[in-house]
Amino acid sequence: MTLTARDLMEPDVKTVSPDDDVAEVFKRFARYEFSGFPVVDDDERVVGVITESDLVDLFEPEDETLWIPIGLPPFVDTLSYQIKRPWADIDLGVDLIRNADRPVSEVMSTDVATVTPDASVDAVLDLLVGDDPDINRVPVVDEEGRIVGIIARQDVIQAFRDRRLA
Image (cartoon, rainbow, N blue to C red; front, top):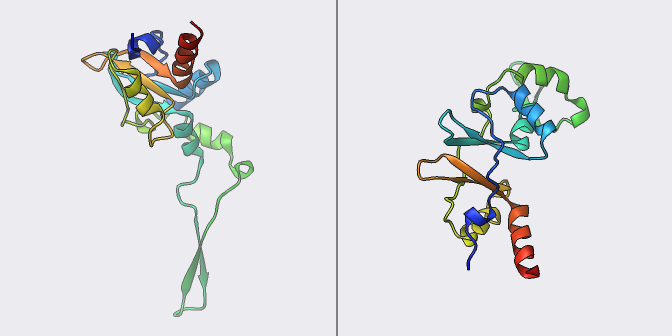
């Protein structure tokens, strides 16, 4: 008997709405030990995924280039340096307040890898060990794209271990 996504999935999926704000999602990350949540619409269709790294990106400056003018007019030139601010220099309180009311729909990834319940374990493994290192969980959806479960890497490992011990 071959394993399918249905055999591996956890049917009790914690999700967020595209209208939830960033502050609410931060609370959910604190409450649950997940690194990401599927984002579902009112019909439970998967429309995106929000991860911890999506939220971390809110606190990193978009422009990391420092422009330094040199010379005197009219012979002014600029030097540019790439700078990375250390986390200690980022005012998380101000950044959190600035972004707290932003809807998840502005921050989430919309290119979501999903499988159906009948997908083979090989199809799930291809996603989890593929070229995208950010895929840690795979939503399982029905024919209409509604979420019916989720598969984490640990679910696959546990299933193989259980089969081996049986």
